[in-house]
Length: 471
Image 1 (cartoon, one colour):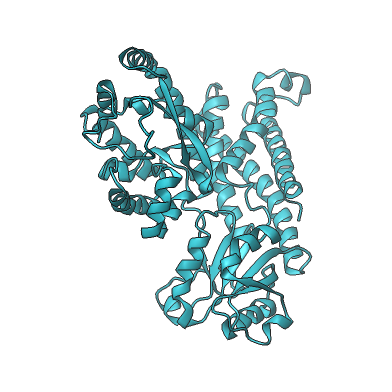
Image 2: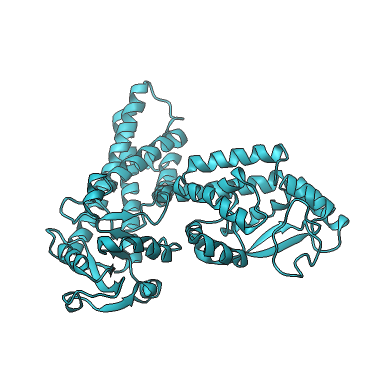
């Protein structure tokens, strides 16, 4: 599969649709609403016409990217595409009217409503027409097995073979190209190796995913092996690039856990690898950039004064960079104003406490009002951190936490943050016990992650800072 080419098809059509929609709408406005004669020379002299021709295709594509339209281009649903195109068009047309059209002078508001409706229908109709053609052609290629998604089957007994048969013999092929299967407890149904290779055990799952470029993992294990699912999924905690599906039992169906994308496909429980929709991730990143820039500009006097006081009150550098573990377990340098004396960890890694003698007098003031964390807005701009997210820790302490609470690795599915639910509810941890205790709140954040939750956490953090209740 050529994903860049497939993405380019959607982008090129969206540009063409935007040009056609705007040009057609402009002609309609001049002829039907403003009552002008067909005079091309007058129209091309109109500034709004050229603004639309130059800016709108780029603006529409940016909106679609922000929405997540160009993600998973081989897995599109025509019904979901209809919904996404409708909402994006509605938002875009409203913006166009405020920017380009509402300064026009016409005789009646009725013409505004008519113009809005015509532009919406043109933009929506032309955009969706091309998209549904591309998506339908892609779906046909999937259903006819010309393209597919490398799939790994976890399970080796009767249920695994039955799942394979169901997926291979379903009325409409879903695109699962089985690369092989992994054993859970060792026993292998004799029929399974005849249809796909045995690639090892579940301990090898990450290696297999990387080696064979797996896009989908299907768990088809026996009921008496269900306790293994959490253990296996924990091995995939850092991945958000693989779709995980589980074959349901009767209880799952009764409780409504099973969601299907097509009436022809076999029912499977899909485990969403990402806590939020793509458009929310895009908006979260936009919020991070805007808020960080504003914070660095507004707090620049505080930044300069803090740096000067740090330099004058204790020997050593103004800034302190420490390696932390971030998104997908990747290390990065987190920047802070130095609040401890130099060589504070000469005896090895250690967490700070309220009466820590390593903290300078001004360092205590900085920590109380979290002034030491202002340089972390630079990390946010770089993309290694977010404004809101679980606090990043050092590998030394992560190893100790994971021994007691393996679910900690779930936090590495998202970017670490300057502030978090755990920070607001619990504060800084002084030992591993408190880190494990704080983990509960960070896991709750992961389960309830949304833009609204981020805004609430941010507001509570501001209140804590203003009250000087930083711990």
